[in-house]
Length: 293
Image (cartoon, rainbow, N blue to C red; front, side, top):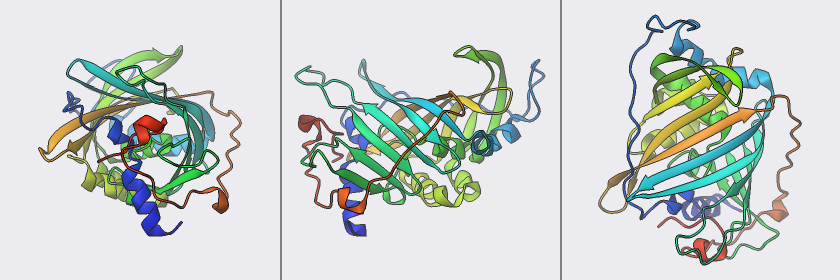
């Protein structure tokens, strides 16, 4: 599959298409503050702790992950959910992504298997004319969102890399995530700054996202355990929808747990990757990710 085919696939499989046409959603609010503000239990500078989060995950090795991506508008909430495993050292992971049922309830989508790898997203059960035994491959640097929302899930390590661009953050307090004590931080990251500090594999995708989103600012809530590992990360992205140029907000939540879990992800062979054109407008009726228009 040549580069032109990769780019064409990238344009037609974007999962933002699930939400395009639903209108503008409520945007997340950013929070300022660069110190712990005297809250008991704070551990050092919040900004520094968040800048280290991605490196801490690499040190942790692997984990299980669940994801959700949602948009609410006009009283309707659309949520895409995923579950799988991730290897932070090798930057590979596998998620099973479940699309929401159509509003009419006429049919149920098949789960999409996604493989996350440096510079690429692989999807199976994509629908839209793709043979059942083939994978769709998308170059993440060619996507206007840098694959932060494309697959209906945010790559867990890319999500952590966004925190390298944290400019303002405040320590909110101690709480728990799934029974694990955590420190809750709230702040805003800048995608342009994150791209400058990111690993080599994420520089280009994050630069693309900084240009492709309606704003390079990403409000977030991050929950770090006492070892500095991300346990929960909620980020809010904004993209421009349609000729009206309306800003649409997408909230992506990543939960990490089961650190040290075995991860065995094998990327598709070249002969297993679909080289044809993905028909636009067929995603919803064929059980795959709806196409972006």
